[in-house]
Image (cartoon, rainbow, N blue to C red; front, top):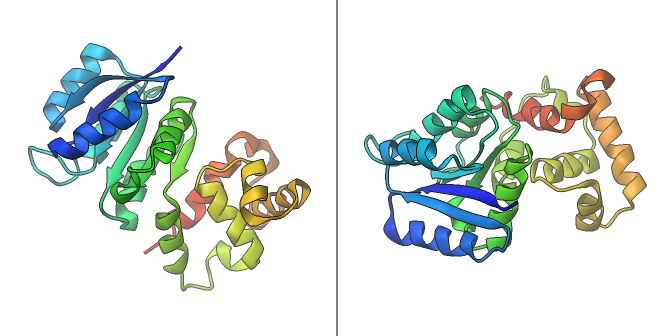
Length: 220
């Protein structure tokens, strides 16, 4: 069954570009395109999409409408995935998006939406409960860390590379290919990350998400 997507974006050309990009994918159907917060909420109720792709700033206030849409869905339709598009890589936006939980949430920079594969990949990921954070945002967050009290200070440079790739939504095989290392090396590094970040075995299902949240939540 195809992934049903509703789009919220106030810029007409960007909105059309997103619609064309997603509609070019055989497994994605764009069921609604809206220019503001209110009309997007109406479209969500009417079309019941699997995923909402939304700008972070839309009418009526041009402030944090995309984050508010994500919050509304977390409370009312938790199974609906959200891909937030933004011109900004400020940590507070990412933290606000992920505060209710990272499952089914993605944060992409608008400059990257011309990459159809990345945008469509994020839609597919959140539709299945995954979480994808733009690699540029992850890099900025990693660079912003200066406190040696952070749990990330325990990680080796290679483990940091693996964590960044994890936050970008890569699978273990994808990380191995990206970093040019073996799959067993990736698994060993991930195990070390979980241990050093004190993520216990019983949390196994969500430890990848929690590892990413560990450094996101510590950015000040």
